[in-house]
Amino acid sequence: MSSSVFPARTTTAEIELGTTLQPKFGPDGLIPCIAQDAQSGEVLMFAFMNAESLAHTLATRRATYWSRSRGKLWVKGEESGNVQHVQEVRTDCDQDVLLIKVEQRGAANAACHNGYASCFYRKVSDLADPARKLQFIAQRLFDPATVYKKKS
Image 1 (cartoon, rainbow, N blue to C red):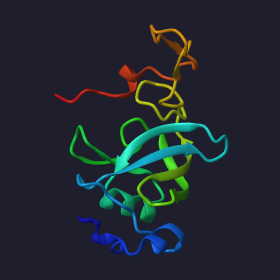
Image 2 (spheres, rainbow, N blue to C red; image 1 turned 30 degrees about the vertical axis):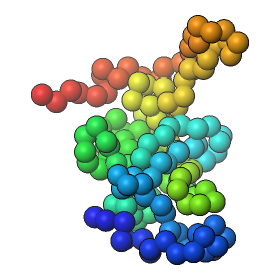
Image 3 (spheres, helix red, strand yellow; image 1 turned 120 degrees about the horizontal axis):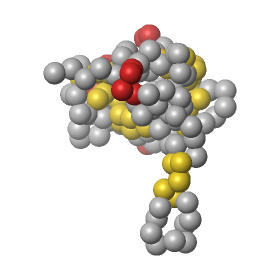
Image 4 (spheres, rainbow, N blue to C red; image 1 turned 60 degrees about the vertical axis):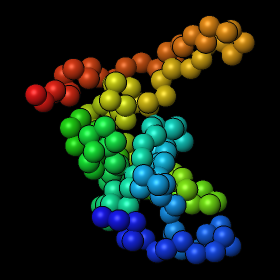
């Protein structure tokens, strides 16, 4: 499916101040997408969408991304059961980034494949330290080895 699912981009004024969704997909056909918890505001994850996954997300209200590593659509939670129900879709001023506000549902209510509520579970512990060590700031909610079965 091509980006023709969405209208062609028009003028800068219409893109930046108009009311028509005109997403700017990159040369690879992808647009960055940030998923945020609709209630808490916590950033859950970052992924890419293509025109087909964005159209599927809008039609089903289930977050659907484009998996670059697998080369296919990926409905969040299809393996883990931790699905993202889309409450709102936003775009930035020039429509080249998406922000989706979701209700994360599932046994663990976790967005990250490593078992954390958010993919952003570490921070640089000391910004002044040139070692740039990472510090865990969240607890793991599930063991990925028990949720994801590797297919041979």
